[in-house]
Amino acid sequence: MSSSSSREFVSGRLGPLIVAIVVTGLLGAFVAWLFLGFGVYTLRSEVNVVGAELRYPDNLMLIVDSCHKAPGVSILRETDVDVQVKVVASSHPFFRGGDNCQDSVGVQLQEPLRDRVVVDMHTGQLVSVTTVR
Image 1 (tube, rainbow, N blue to C red):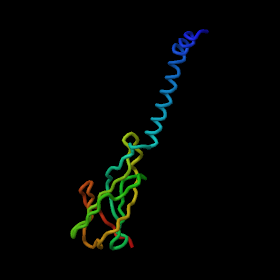
Image 2 (image 1 turned 120 degrees about the vertical axis):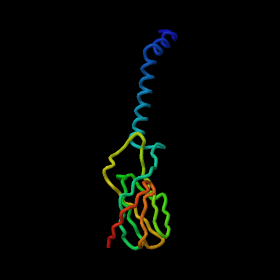
Image 3 (image 1 turned 135 degrees about the vertical axis):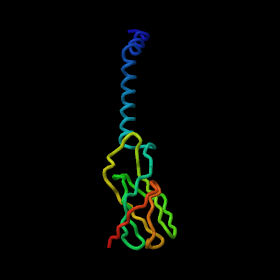
């Protein structure tokens, strides 16, 4: 087989097969990367604060709808009349897990809660606070 014949064989029969194998491998790796939640596509977004427990006069445990998505307080503002909180958790734009469970996030206040109300900054709603002793 001459040099030009072997090039024709590779480009004619094996070329498309090699390209298909490489493209399939890259596509498979990309899909796995997306669905496993790796990379820059894992974002932090706001979640609802659905309740709170007052553990100590200056310690709240916020109950949030995040379902094992590493929630954390992103904003905590205290005034004489209220405590405003915003909680964020991980999210993935292409893969949504179940949102049917809740997590808790501890908050240390600078002053005891006393008669102040707790406000979820994400929804603008008052948060029901239960005292736990």
